[in-house]
Length: 306
Image: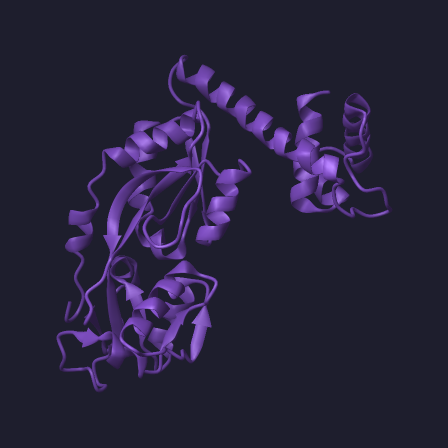
């Protein structure tokens, strides 16, 4: 059994296609297939369901996959640990962030890169469920997600800031002279909101329900950019995290009003897998997050009427 055979298996499970998995591993398809066969021979079990196309893993293959993911993560961690003793951390921080946190992600990754200049960072916009899955299957080193709304499992957390909410709406509309707006009132506006699979949307729906209201958005999207586009070019309002004000820029004839009755907030933080030893890049991300004070930076964000 060779490390590269485990890499072939993990790539095949992820891509679900022999040719794509081979391309990801920079080998030919026959080479990948031969490597999988050697892995099976060394273990004495079938790992991949037999067929002309990829049909999935056998039950034994699923168990082998879980071990392969852990072993490859440990190998990567070993390389990072050795590099750290010879001139500094070298590696790639694989970070998943919920869309609502993306406006603030640079406040975490920029200090990380500054402290560890030989390391790099890759950021994916993911749902909170996908971040949990990525930490579990070793495809992510860390995530930025909500800490206090839906249960997290097998993770270590570092609080970063509290997310608060504003209504972005027309300055020429019925809320144009207001300094704040209630959740019940906001529910009756023509809204664009995140899709129901996003935790941000589930949070907002919970707050609307708490005041006996139901939001029926005209537009739903799984990216904040799409919501911002509808605010700029359509006659819509949106309930967004206040952090979005940092990257949206002022929209013509639009205002941002704090949402009250009730005033609510949710904690956003860094999460890493709760395993020992942690990978060096995950441990480094925790050290950076522990040193940050983002709340004051976010409190200073301003926009018309906020």
